[in-house]
Each structure stands twice: as C-alpha cells, then as structure tokens.
Length: 393
Ligand SMILES: Cc1ncc(COP(=O)(O)O)c(C=O)c1O
Image (cartoon, rainbow, N blue to C red):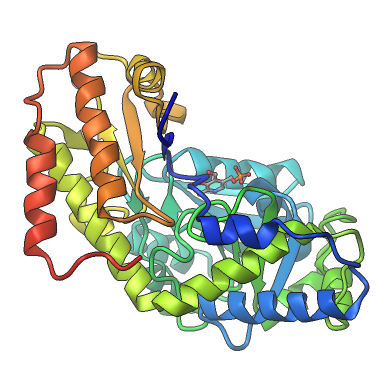
C-alpha cells in the first residue's frame, strides 16, 4: 500500500526519522570510551525527563512488563503486604507481578474509567496503624482506559496518613508526554518503556529509583538475578553494564532525549494536552462517548472510545486496518470488544492526528455506525484553530 501506515495505537509510536538515523550506525564496543559517554548522556537526559535530581536511573534490555518485575524484586520480599490501586488492565498486571513473587497484594479496586481515589487510599492507609503495607502500587496513566491518576494526590494521601510505604509508579504511557515529577511527588520507583513518549522502538525497561528504594533493595529478599539493579548501578558508574546492552536503542535514546530537550518538556506536555483535547472533541462531535469519566483525569496520551450499543470494537479495528492501514488500540481486559483506543502520543502533530481521526470516521461508517462524516474532524479542527499556535514539531 502506498503512503505511510497510521500507527494510532497508544504505543509503540512512530519512530521519527532523526531517531531512525541515529540508530543506523555501526555497533560500538560496549566497554569502550564512546559507549561510556553514551551511557552518561542517556542517564543524565532521563533524569531530566523523570524530573529528578536525587533519583538514580536503571536501564535494562526489556519492556514495561520487565520493569514491573524489576520494581518489585528489588524492593520487596515474599510475604510483604502491598496495596495495589487497580483501575484497569495494566494496573492488574502490575499487581499480578507482585503476587507472582509471593507478595501479599491487597487491591484497592476502582471501576474502569476512573483514577485512583486519593481519599479512599488515605483512609485505608490510616487504618494500617502498624504500617504493615510496605508499598503502594499505582499506574500513572492507565493505558487500557485512558485515565490519568493524580500522583501528587497519592503522595498527599501517604503523607496525610503519615504512612511510610514505598510509592511505586508505572509511567509507561505517561513519561515524556504527561507531566510526571519524581522528586516533587516523592516517588520511590518510577518505571517506563521506550516505545511511547520516548518515541523509540520497544526493547528497554527504564526505572528511576529513590534513596529509600535503594535502601529497601538491600533488605529485599525476592529472588533476583537479571533484574537485580545493584550490579547495574555499580557498573553504570564506570559507563558499563553487567551484560551486553541494547547499544542501538541507546543511540536512539540519546537522540530522543536531545529532541525532547530541544522542544522543551513543558512544550511537549502542552502539545500532548492540545492534541488530546482535539481528539476528545472529535469523539464527542461524532456523538460517541469517552470511557474516562472525570475531565480532570482524561489522558493526554490516548482516548478510549466506547462503542455504540450493538457494535464490536474488535471488528472496527480489524476493518480499519484492512481498508486503511490504520491501527487503533483494542479494548483490553474488562472492556474487550467494547472500546477502541486512539493513541495521540510521541512524535505527533496536528495533521497526524487529523489523518487518524479521518480514518476513525471512515472505519465507523464502513462498519455501519451512523456517524456524520466530517463531524469529528470539524470539532477537532475548530479547537485546533481556536487554541493557541500550531503544535511544535
Ligand atoms: C501502563 C502500562 N504498563 C505496562 C505496560 C507493559 O509494557 P510492555 O508491553 O512494554 O511490556 C504497558 C504496555 O502498553 C502499559 O501501557
């Protein structure tokens, strides 16, 4: 098919040409001086993106799922109790990873479409007067529902209850797209992957780790070998890794960090917020509903759209790809077949978004959903024109 494919899923995202070119170079010696400089640039740039001065960065070849595992095995022991805030498919996965290591997981269940309720969290933490709960697990941006939880409010809940539990936060679909402040929000472990806001191909597990989490890792007794972050931190100080690293992805990561620096994190967040609002207006313009209930929690990286009664989102997604080469995100977990997800993150501009939205309109009509062609695009375009300035590159 001529033209470019529309990868409008909430990650992996399209990899910009600049990053592709940065990765297209001969592999270097991962114990040599050029590599040490590359590691230094990646770690320093990631600290800026996590907004931390005091945290340490740990990188592995892997994925977000591996990063869950690294966060758990390095901070906890079998039999520890943790409170997992579960409001979708990925927060369920994070909780299950802890369970797989014998951690005793209590779930704070939240309906799909809602964020972590800080008031409920605080009252549960207040009941735990003996401080049995060793950690609180939160997904900043629940990619299955398009809901962003307020991590600052989660920190305030911990502080309000005077509870010392570690705060472990999944930022897989928020980092480098939605404001996330590791230091200011007192996060102990933040974990992510490279294939979303960082605009890279998949293949890394990336963590930011606080001094408290480092101290906890000295006592943690979960079995760990590959995910043990201590040898990684130790060898990183010399610009090396305790294994053969994903050199090509690190070339790309250094370029991605440079691009984020050039645009400025604040502008990156603003661009995502503006394009996300345009997408939501398009969805409403088509007369469809968004799964996220609270406007303050609408995600700026993806929108989960509820299918009208009687239509299957899996069928919509199949047709969108077959007829238009447009990839949309499937409904996951409890909302399988009932929602489709539009990704609007990473290296994305206005026309990229509008192209994807045009595809959504066409695919809906092709399936027989009675939407008015152009109604979504008109709403998005009107908003883009009315909101300040064009999106930066
Ligand atoms: C919020 C969140 N956490 C974890 C993961 C798992 O990451 P990976 O698929 O890279 O293992 C994803 C994947 O999309 C995600 O969106």
